[in-house]
Every structure is written in C-alpha cells, then in structure tokens.
Image (cartoon, rainbow, N blue to C red; front, side):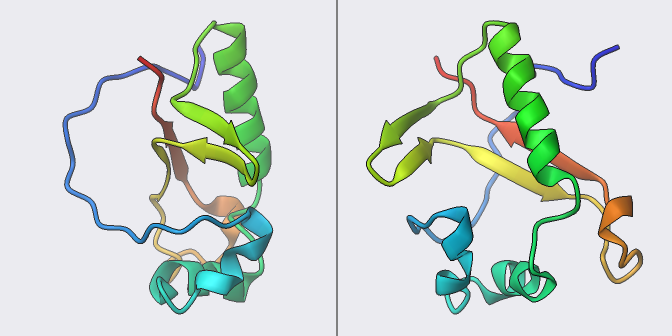
Length: 109
C-alpha cells in the first residue's frame, strides 16, 4: 500500500507570513516568524529525512500523472500550497528522526 494519497480537504483557517526566500535563506525571515523558522534555524535543518520524503512524494506524483499547483520563477519554484505539518511535539520527542511529519501539496486544477 502506498503511503501517498490524493484527498480533498475542507477549507482550513490558517495564518502565515508571505515571503519569497530560498530554503537556504530561511534565516533571513526569522524575525517575521520566529516561533517556527527560528526554531528550525536553531536546529540547523528541517526534520531528518524531510528532503528525501519530499523527493519521494514528487516522484510518486509524477509517476501517477499528477501535477502540483506551482510554477517556475527566476527565483525558483512558486507553490500555491505546500505545507509541512509537524505532528510530533519536539518537547516530548527531541530526536528529529522520530518525528512524524505530514506533507500536503496542492494539486493543479
């Protein structure tokens, strides 16, 4: 059974700060969203394995003929909706290898 699925989700109120930065430049916006990005910056990374998991998801979607709601820009990818949900409380489990993280990327169309 595949760990991936396509699902329709209800609208969910969210709050965020809009900024255009490369993953390597996240530290430049830590003053705007200190609780999340500052915390990740202190750790020096995203949760262990996240880049690999993201790559696997992108490859699975391509093989399934799915297209994400994104486009190329001079600065890189621009996504309409790309989310990482950290389901593990780092205060309870400080080892990032043990964290459960859900990826949710908006499909085109």
